[in-house]
Image (cartoon, rainbow, N blue to C red; front, side, top):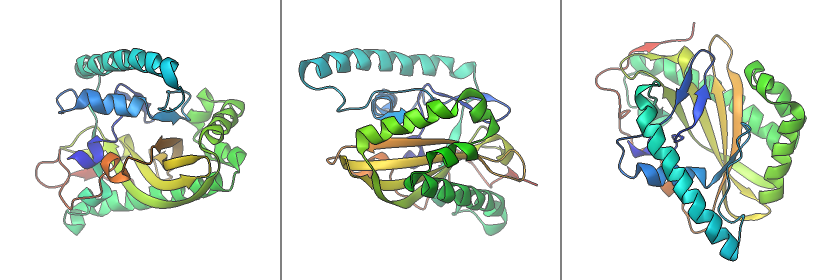
Length: 259
């Protein structure tokens, strides 16, 4: 259960092409800590800057941190209160889907394979420094709300904080959906993660590539750069697959495939 819950975005809205969702875990143990961990760690290319540990130092850092802790815990509580008004989201890693019989899992595994191809290409373009080409590959909905200038500036900010990405390797995939009783692949999205090292950061870096597939072609809908300090194990933040079925799905997989 924990392997994908740790990646859910507390109080953050996502648009999948037809619906807007808010991710929340109001009943999960340690929910506030997960919210705080995420909101203080990530700086996102979706246009919403979030402060990361290590930006401030000394007394100023502590003052800002306490203020952020109070604000972010309030956000987490509010996200729990809003869960009735907005659809709840669920998630499962690739390893979870792979535990099901071949006939049941085939549509979602094909979906994940298609997403992986787009993600691999996108992260390679990012690694080679062709950020303008990366923007060109983004979905139309992304471009409608983000200019190329803003996109380039965001990635320049990434590089200013972590330096150049030296290398990367595939880590895992997860699919986020809105109905565990019947998964419609048209209405979810895939997050493909890569573990990386960067020249200006002693800790680790996670590159997350988000894709959606409302029809026959996967769309690149977002890319995020996350960092964590050297004392933190990536397995703590993103545990490897346990070989257990998807936690929210009771019984067989029921899936509407992409035609």
